[in-house]
Amino acid sequence: MKMLEKGFERRFQDLPLELEGYDWFDPHVHILPPRRMKGLIRWVKGFFPGFPLPEDYGREQVLKGLERAGVRRFFNLVFPLWAEETEELNRFNYELCSGVPGAVPFGSLHLDHPDKEAETARCILEYGFAGMKLHPFAQGFSAFHEEMRPMYEVLQDAGRPLLVHTGFEEFYGMAIPLKDLERHLSRWDKVQVVAVHGLFPRFDVALGLLESYPNFWVDLTNSVSCMRIYYQYKGGEDGGWEVQGFDPYEISKYERHFEKLLEENAGRVIYGTDYPVGFGAHRALLEDLRYFRFGEGVERQLLHDSVLSLLSRCGIEATDYGREEEEITSLAELRHQKESSG
Ligand SMILES: [Zn+2]
Image 1 (cartoon, rainbow, N blue to C red):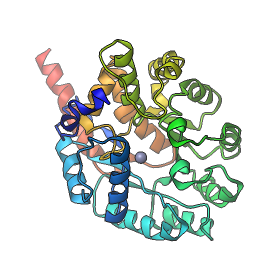
Image 2: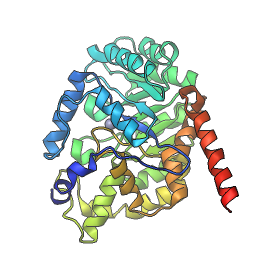
Image 3: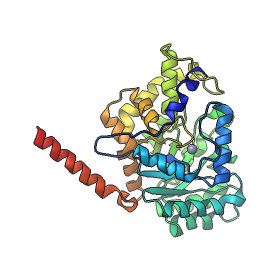
Image 4: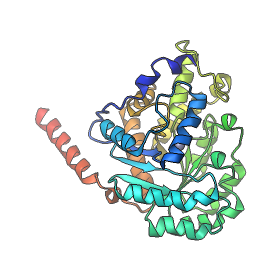
């Protein structure tokens, strides 16, 4: 726990990001109803004893933090732990995001929900959600279970994406059925599937899927921080992370694949945060990415361009979520400044 304890509070300060001419479009934020937020924070404290947020951390605090960092667009993700809370959670996300310009809602579903088609259709067609998100390990069922078919049918017809938790299998003590994932990628070819955490640490598998399936995407939420901890551990700068599943020897096998993912595939890689319950606030998470020195081009793709490509592949224009006009203006201003100074 050495590295995570020292400077851990500092990592959670919401500091401005000062990116050049664009904003971080965060594809992984959790604003949940108070009861679920409390449960989530309590769970995180179980393996991050120094985790600094109080259990009653509320939606206003999250929104203020995003504002301070300058993050004005984000995907808000919810997922029911049991079927009965599905509708209430989706409704919550609808109401929350309706009042927050730049918040992009995703719906969710449970394997035991009696009418998956109707609930998915409600999310996509009635609420206007961007897509769906599943967390099979937390929810306790496979995202690729045959019974989830009605959800895939709605997504396929609408051409909308599915975000699905992958990776950290040792930590959760569960595994993604890869054969089923591949079968779904080819069968539901209009559904862009985002592998959240990029199958950490199996970046070799993620690379293979990127090559074989044009509808496969990778989100490196938390994985970048874990790789930074791993590299520092390897370099003797840090004591690593004493948590189940953080095995430096195992990670070392996929180091090169991780680099290749960013160096050669950044066009289909996005970088979310799990804010406010990830490895820190935005500034610290940006520093984690910068630790690798992949360069400004890669950075901009992960933080912004690839998120817009993903949405546009799903027929969603970023202007639907505001901000784009302001952004274009600021880019034009930047160009103008550069021209007049050079
Ligand atoms: Zn998450």
